[in-house]
Amino acid sequence: MPSLESAREYLSKSLASNRANGVLNQNKVNGLLAEVDFREHLRHLGFAERISLGGWIARKVGAGDFGAETVALFPEVCADISQLAQDRALTEPSRGLHTICSTFYQIGIRSFFCSLQIGDGADPATWRWQALRLGTPIEEQWQPLDAALEPYLGRRARPYNWLRFNTDTSRIADEFVAEEFLKEHLRVSAMASYMAEISDVDGILWGNEKTYPLEIKEKTAASDSKLGDYFGIDVGPFVKLAYYAAKRGNLHSLFVVREIEDTQTRRLKQWWFIPFDRLAQYASWNQQGGGTNMRGGASTVVLIPKDRFTELSREELEKL
Image 1 (cartoon, one colour):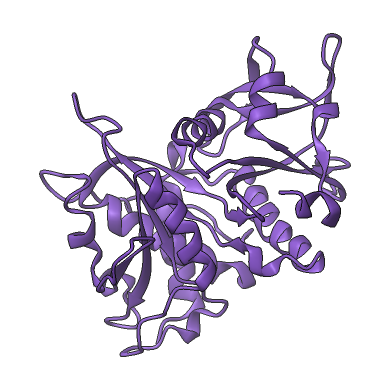
Image 2 (image 1 turned 135 degrees about the vertical axis):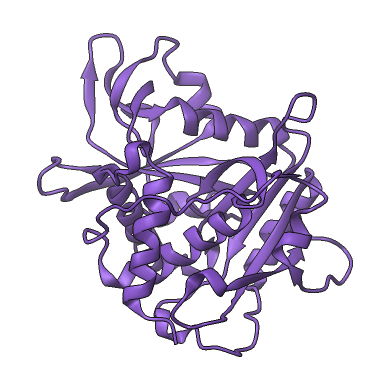
């Protein structure tokens, strides 16, 4: 049976290989906790069934092929790593995820729900993902993840080892290890064999009429003489939200901010959100250097006036 220790050891390697210099920076942990806190906030507002957990979006790379194909991968949800017993049945996707992936299908994004099959319980390297395509008008069958990705992403000449480094994961609380482990194990399993540009999906909210991929960040408000108080968003996430806007259809996106009082206590001050349409309209054309990004390097930040955000409440969510 898998253990918390083996999952944490795996994370110490996978997270290090996905960060600059193999160092897990505090922003990554803060971002993870903000995602968890956001889902808890939606639960209190009565919207727990309207949001999916996160996953990955990947697109094909290579001269002449870049961006030609895009896939979305959503791992199963597990609160306790010990629930991942050997020879267990594959987990079935939620009805809500079917709805989300149907929207993705309509704009040309192939979506897969993935369930993990356990080999040697003590060795995550022996565990394999099964993938079920969602959102299509026909009944799909489970298949190995490797076979599911074959038509859409370019295969590497030889497998890439993402587990070369180690970092300290003690700042990730035990109750979040299973969720982060499943997400990271899926990423490594896919990217070990395939070349792709990949980015995380913090979650997807489906409203009354539209589907909203989410970018969730923890921020303190800063001030500028031209904009007044503002929040910043790194160029990478901004471009990802722009990609969703370019695909359009029934797909929109939201930038969600967990505003905190200060960076020491990280005490919640207020939840805010802004649809990408408004973000793009009011974002400053003059970028500026930011702090450390999720990969541990220096960031470039797009500035959005705080007064263009909307307070995240039950009443506002009902309008989406």
